[in-house]
Length: 528
Figure (cartoon, rainbow, N blue to C red):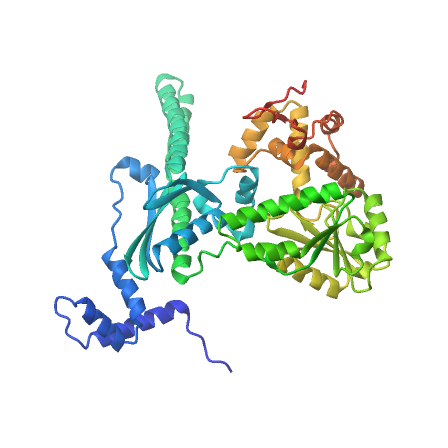
């Protein structure tokens, strides 16, 4: 029977107590010199580098005084900070910290100074989607702050003092505005209760005012939970820096670029894949320029990438991932052709977002070697892959496909073979309901977007998201899902159909619900 494990917390208490007991054998008087502390540490078995780091932390420790008075108690501080002594040289730590903030915390450089750098939340639809979905299992707490500043000071060779400060004035201001509105309503209710002589109404107004007043305080005091998440985020960055998990090279592209797979891209014309290759080369060049990818890795990746217009060239591939238009007949024609070309061990996968995998697998003689691999756009940024197993997919094929998705640095989830899988099954009805709300005059386009942003905390409204996804794409997906389920919530609204017919497909066409030919985009007059 295995011995009972001692928890980490208990182990820390045991070691601390043992060190205290051994240290108590010495008479330390009013204190010890640095050399005496190092000697004592040697006696109790603490490596000098850890004691040196702890000593530096103690010497640079500062106490952050909390504001006094009613306003700080009510709305919280305007800044949060955390500091730590980390092993390493200043230049390396600054580089590592910058790469981490950009790629893992969804921040971008705001200002660079000689002694510090400040970051602000990344802007744009893709960053907003990542924050909303919490990709990679992250909450992106630091991106909720208006600004995060980092200062790295070299204390002595091998050790730096790192301080992170988050400016949370934006959250504080939002809470105070909300609380102020409620407080004003409370005051109005109380004043009205004082002047209305009706016996029954006056107490109700006073009670309503009291409730609104309490609500105002609660809204303002929400800073405890919000600030705690940001404070924990600061501490977690420093923890990773201290443990060496944040390094200058941490942001190198993962297996998406450097997994070592020889990749052959087949498209209908050389012009198309010339543009595709140019885009890939441009992206890799930016990574090299930013120091996130060694030039040798870029060259190696490009050597493993080749293009063709001939379907027959795919005959030796281990896995074929189809990503053509959402047209079942077109997809099946391609898979039938491939079925007669590729070997028996080749796995077929479709990147469809709405068609069922069974409908495509049935067109081939390898239903047991057919899966769905649904990547999300933009693929380099979105970590999710839905791995779809249909009724004929073998366990071995599903296992290999799941492992392949993970080898690309993606977060894989298992999904059943139903139209829309997981994400679109839930997302599409929400988007279509937003269009119906506009059709029925429930609210205007900007107000629907604003209501869902501010009421549900979404990074963008549903109609803005529709413009980003593409109205034509959404229309086609909705048609497929309605045919599959025969449920009204998946039926394309007439307004969506009319906009697609008119060529108002969103950002890709320049106009959708908004006109993107101007900056900032303006509302399109749809005549409703």
